[in-house]
Image (cartoon, rainbow, N blue to C red):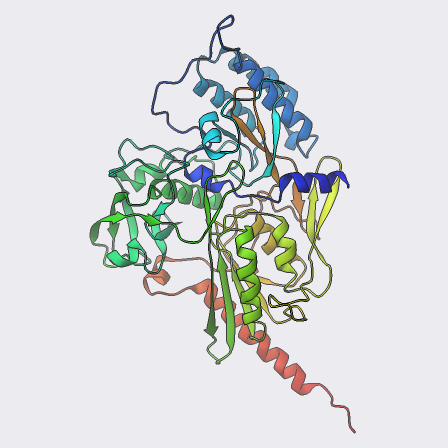
Length: 513
């Protein structure tokens, strides 16, 4: 087994950490109690502040995929920040120093998960940190998460939430209000309303502007965003803050104020319903709910197109995806909607892409410090019912946006790079680094990137993201008119491709008897 293969086994893919972020578990959540001081030397508890800082620094030193550390003098970072860690008078101060250290790398997939959150999320592990060795113990999981230096402002802040029960927490965030949002200009706008959910039942429509969540003005929440973010990062962080406020326990209520299609204020109290989908539990992650929907659409010319939409790259998606491909195998085209897809198990990219590829083609490479592993598509030659089939050879389109992350970016970027799919929508955030987590001496968990990912042509997806072949911006006007411009563009492209293929077939010379 090569080093890269061993690492991939350790990663178990690229697992989504975003649920933990939404539950307020990463970054520096606003404390609800005074910070706990680090015990002085000679006390009953060991002094772990400096040990924890040193362990975090050493883990990055030994495992980061770039020996130049993105151009950062890593030794100098330690020299400048170690005195701050030594002087830290509380866990909160220590965590801020470690987060500042991670932020110096300027990349995604770097975060610090507080001990209490990690213990809650990992029910299999003891609540006591390992005392056998101060250099941290490694957990065999991987994930996608925030860009280093990003703070989770507004996440987990419940002081003015206006709720009847506690706000989202790792064990209590499986309730949602039934709509999603995107930042359009300076407004947080409803972009999708779930069928039969609380929002639809209350009359919420796509295109409505969210003004308040609880007692928090959205404009005030958005002011917490760092000023140095680019447009994609700003959109993603705005979504993250909003979702953290919208999530909560099933049965709890949240006060919301919207501007409707006429820009008139609408105040609603929405009761959160339980998340739908299949429950997934993975390592330090909170409970996730995998969802897949599929439907058959008609083009303007009367052609049939299969649409598959799912939210996570997790095992429960695999079977329904296989069945959806079987259902759409004879259609004029297939569209994979990855908008709002938070990533998941990276290994699934190799399996699902095989539905569209007849050959064992590489979708890109995972590069660690000393090795490389290619993500080869695995051609799918057997249907979900066990019959011999050929991979789908018709036009394939992929929809992405500012909340298409990690494994979603790897799939879209790889399929685009090899020319097997055309991508529509908006640029993705560029958070596509394979990462793992390690437990630190004080029980906190360090989440850190250990590999880079590049497409077959050598394009790094980190920071750059996936740039659609056809960039189709979302607008409030489209949402209010119930239009989906990215989906419409993909449908038109599929119709053109089918027309062109039909014309070529008709014009091809026939063999005379």
